[in-house]
Length: 331
Image (cartoon, rainbow, N blue to C red; front, side, top):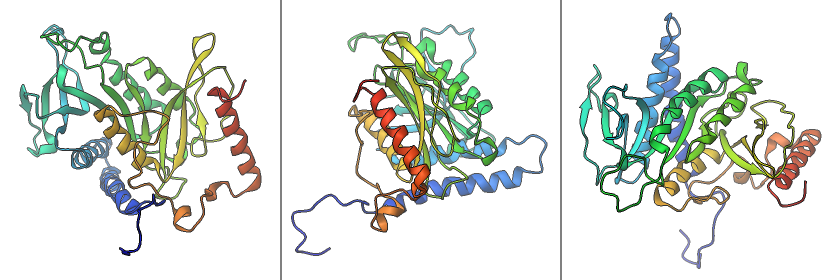
């Protein structure tokens, strides 16, 4: 470090952005190996289990030690014992405060094979993991998250001694390991994810790899609120896509937006951390750590995907339309 560099100024790309993305690549490499080994089997599910385990491992290493990551069950005294206990792929909970009611082991006996039962009031987040982003897998993720509804029906006072519901700062999200080229026109997938918008604390989701794009790119699926209903004409999920609108009131519409960038994996990671800290704002970058792109490294802020003039102009028009929908200009 040069001694004359004082005072420090924000650097974009920030230090270590490529190193941070290596953790994403490790998850995807393990997933690809499992998928290849699984290719000759009649029922191909092993790569999905590997995806869950690898994501839990990465997330547990990333988050502060106050938060533990497990698969397992959320236990509430308000749910009858006759009801089937729901198993979730990823549960984030406060391990400094929470007891573990019991542990169920998988045959592999590893930490990633264990399922823990966590009392409802200590659960901070649930994430459903799926291998591919398409309508079928999105439907499964949404259906699973929808099972949280009884636990989200109320927000209890902090001083209430017996807790039956998930905390007020609870969040839920989805993660998909890849968007395959064969699913690139499956716009029903993002429409289906819109159904999760009714869940309190729904963040959206992340797609770790988009097979038509370069290796550093990730997809970010975000809920947005607009003040009018605009019919989007989607070109491809790998380009830029929007779900149909869901009308909330005469002037409020809700939709999901899918965008791709080399910064989106780090944004997703630090958004989770920001949610857990209570500082998250959907329209503000949660952190400048590990933010960078190949173009920034080369001295340009322009995404090379839009260097084609026709495509770049279309992107600008869609961006301007999106800003108008957010209320920066009248529709």
